[in-house]
Image: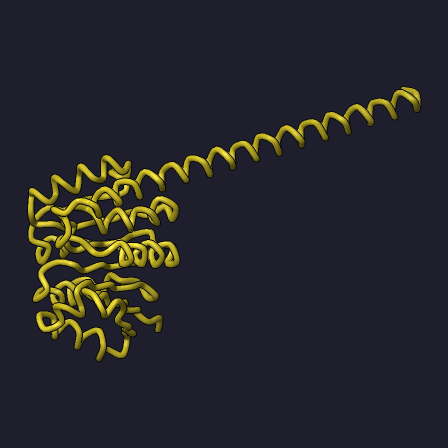
Length: 227
């Protein structure tokens, strides 16, 4: 092969490589844009269901506030949580806030509820929000059903019978991973009903607890320390 032909072949190969690289970058950019668009649509769908629930007066006394919901979202995303356990599904409102984070962390939610009517509403809301695949609902008395849990827990959220908070903590704390969080609702307005729980999360040297939203129902955030 002559020198000119060799040079031509090298030039053609280089040009082909540039074209392939350009096409690959274009495909990657398109894929990223498609993925971003899909994520925005999924997020918007969940937020739309949450807004409808917030505006429904039937649920006024059933749920956490939207501000508290955003706290759940932020903490779950920041912890890169893979497994969230919720005690007290109710109509699924707080679960949807968790799902906003779990769909991006690749995680899942296991939520416990004793009331069949509330479970049916939660299932409807999960379906409408497109998050049913992220959620496992466990029906029955959570004081019993939580004993079946075996997997590590990144975040535990307790919002059920207030006198039972300490029992839930006692049974599930061993499963909460070091660096994991325990969240509890109504720690201000119904504090008198959960004194044993509050003492446990403030006196245990392996736990660090702060109290937020004291002007409303209140929510406690407890860190299980790494040792």
